[in-house]
Image 1: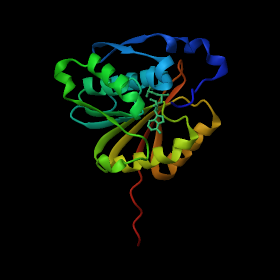
Image 2: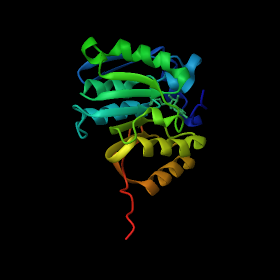
Image 3: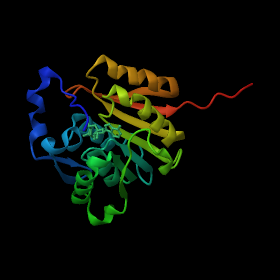
Image 4: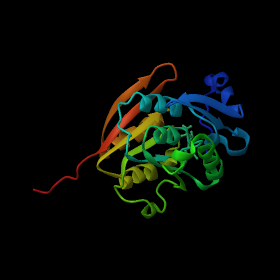
Length: 218
Ligand SMILES: C[S@@+](CC[C@H](N)C(=O)[O-])C[C@H]1O[C@@H](n2cnc3c(N)ncnc32)[C@H](O)[C@@H]1O
């Protein structure tokens, strides 16, 4: 799996990642997410960015009822689960090795009447994107997915493929290294972006982005 986005001086705060589960209450539901750092690394723990994204979604600043959403790099699936509980129809995605763990968490945390609102499927950024409808999503969600420089180009390609002119991208980011801002600069070349929220305690930024309308030749 991917490299661990560790920062030396925050190691004590990261001990929670080694717990076998993480509990939250969002959207009036108690959620118990299984974690397995040893087996699956970064994809099998709940990162602060996901928690802050859920807090942001719960604030109601983004309309989720009846919207078609997709989550990229979902890990344990917390964000997708909360988006579904708040009324969206969500495709929750990650790379293939993470999918069984992700599916089990989604199944365990959604009441039966919400299970039909989610699909879990494989999406490796930039690969076989034609399996997902171009411009087919109202909302594209990603928590802590900006951390591997090699993935910046395919991640941007993926966002461009999934977005229509009216789609909204929400990225919850921990800026750990200067290189992480390179992605934001790349994003700004293709999308209008703004910082929608900042949570100081966990140092998480939420960026909102919309596709730039294609330039028309005069
Ligand atoms: C730091 S974890 C964040 C997980 C979850 N979103 C959260 O915040 O708890 C990064 C996630 O991105 C996924 N990921 C990394 N590279 C990827 C790629 N090239 N394509 C798809 N997903 C990828 C990893 O599998 C992992 O689940």
